[in-house]
Image (tube, rainbow over all chains, first blue to last red; front, side, top):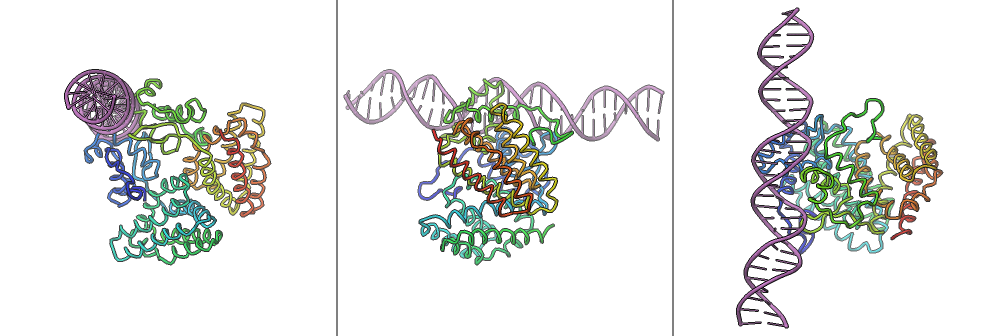
Length: 223
Length: 223
DNA sequence: CCAGTCGCTATTGTCGACATTCCGATGTCA
DNA sequence: TGACATCGGAATGTCGACAATAGCGACTGG
């Protein structure tokens, strides 16, 4: 939605090592390639990534603010270790954010275009239902990001994205397969339906329930 | 609340240039010393702050994620320029976050201690009512931060803090004096009152209304 | 055998320099 | 005169090196 070109001619800026390192690290962490708790040694990482420490440090600062990396004593950074309470906390905030999005969209005047795009997003989820695991996760997150994006509130989108990394870690916390087993399409459809009919409170509640259930489900599978 | 030592023995780590630069820049921006739109030239700033560019860059990355600095073409950074719609957007998200906080606190079991602390925060606001302008702003933000802090949800607090810079810029957008004239203590008292009686929906609504009114007020004073 | 001290090592903090790239001025040729 | 090539200048991107410090282990004196 944003990492990819917005539409036609979205973004052609795809260079600079910092961004690449950022993407690589984010992926490594949310994939589990870098296990939670792993101490990230700058010299080591910079060598593996073939970039200088300075460049790496900039990327890590950002990861830190995204909640993927936590700081220990003496400036030491480590991959964040999530606990059950963290997952619950994250999804509570997420619910507030996406709940706001759903309400805003429900109260909007020209909902047709928005609803159309959300339905497309759901369609994409169904299309990928027999595809790659990561692909399905991606499709799910795309839907939820779209929810925020379509409100036209950049701050809301930004806040959501700041949480995206944590959300991905929550998924990993429970295991990708297990997390996916909970992602029923009808859950999302009912949210869109409420938005379509302009049922603001219904849409908000649908989102909040969805989030709470998901969190509960993920926690139940806790390590 | 967090910048200051937590209580006794809170934090004794107060060095490293990056943090200092971060604080200095944050202050300069939210004070207006660095006007919105100002192009932040790395070489120039690093010389003024007497630090190296690398160190400065790390600080600026963080400011960027906090929404105080926006990136233009070719990696150029500039002090973010807020418009009326930005202020509205920011306060919408803020309302969602603090609304969640208020609801959580209302539904909590042992509310006495929490309520006590919030009342203390209000007291501090009143104490500073004839003090320095910045002091009053600080007291106000302290109250709202406490709202998030007391929920015990670190993610919520983190998200709020990510927004704090933007909130401060919104205040500056309208002018500190004007912004302060809207901060009536009774507004906050009614929030605490609702929390005290366990009225979750009332507390949430009180917060949301407070936020919406404030946003409206700030926008009305637009530059 | 224990305690205290000294020095080494691992890792982060900070810096200055070089590389790259875009923008604009300048100059030249049809 | 207008368009195009070229040359600086100004910023950002990236790098490698040095400084500082905490933690650890060995060594020594009692």
